[in-house]
Length: 248
Image 1 (tube, rainbow, N blue to C red):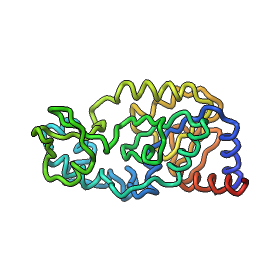
Image 2: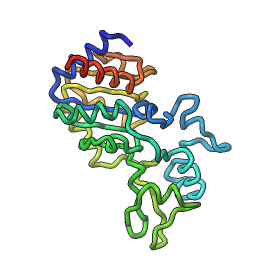
Image 3: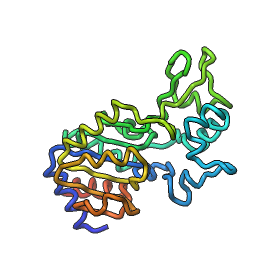
């Protein structure tokens, strides 16, 4: 990792007034949560002839709920995961009022666990679950420690509040995310290949001065980026935090 890149990133953040962070699975890998496309990622967790996209779809949830929840418990829930250097840096940045929003494709809830408030969870949150009959709220542990189809006290099915394949994004979350991206002077895109739509297209609303991309693999936004870092986002923000503390 080049010191010049860290210095440039630090300078852009210092000059910015309205920063928005747009992140994906790569933000949470340092917390022990697999990404999607690596050798050990979610897409490698094939169940017979069924792909993860098929199992985590709206139609599969309704047609084969027991198989859905079996896969969901094994591959989507990480109760021991804790915020890493990326989450903690973004929390500190929000405290300065420079960070106006975090737009995340992740469902792990780690940005909120780190203390951030201005979070737009495009695909929902595994910590939020509800009964499909009476709408009662349940914690993640209710699903994690149940067997088969998790049931509410009323007998209804408890469903995680996440966006399944084949479902639209939540309207008001998208409105808020697009508003912050449109008004940002700096957009940091990190830990995402920008391959999942319609979430990835939200960055097209950015009209600000500084676009920064931090991702190990190429993304469609690379050519537009003022600063491109082929690095792990937790390592980058860890270095940035260290540098700022050394300067102080």
